[in-house]
Image (tube, rainbow, N blue to C red):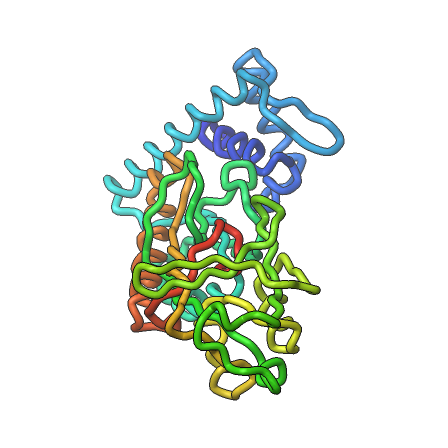
Length: 317
């Protein structure tokens, strides 16, 4: 294995914190990965990784070498692609919420794969926060107001949100025309992964903004579970409209207080600083930005309009 290949192996081991996971990503045997790292450490004359039975972490020297490797490998890939007019190739890991994957991203992925047959993709999904660098993820689609981050990103649009309930839950109750009319209602609360606390309902009309925590017997920390709990009549909830189109069309859910829609939930494509220098990642990020901008503008499955702003892994994901 030449020096650049060994550097690429080392980078993946650091990011995945595992020889086995790095080998799987790279399509190599674990023994090959182990020998590559050992050879690299022997050549450098320092230990670059601390190995335990549970995790692999870089030493201070290994961390410094990792950052130099990222820059060098990005420069090499960029130069080879530009000068030799080579097609893009390699492995890309990205992560997004499952509903957004299925609604806006997966239907368009064949375009990217046809354009770049040398690219392999790993698609991750879920509500949880992800550590892009430590999990070896090249880019992620996140919804919500982002906290301070070392990641680079571009906002591509907003998700419309509203307040919803099941017809069964509303039966026998007066339809609210104002947030003050929610006395006697319960909410299904979404627990923030950042604070561990229930997120209040938000109502906005013109310059007026209200936040409310209604009584709650059921709380959830998964966006799909929130939709199902509201559908089952356990209380009212606030969610992105694009998730609910079939349920609204069938009458399984009803929107209430439409004139008091929550503020929009921003959607951003994020990637670690320096990672976009790799042409394959740059191309994929540009592709995601293009298709999500189109979808969120109303030309795709995600409708435009007002909605709710939330923490990075809240119900708007």
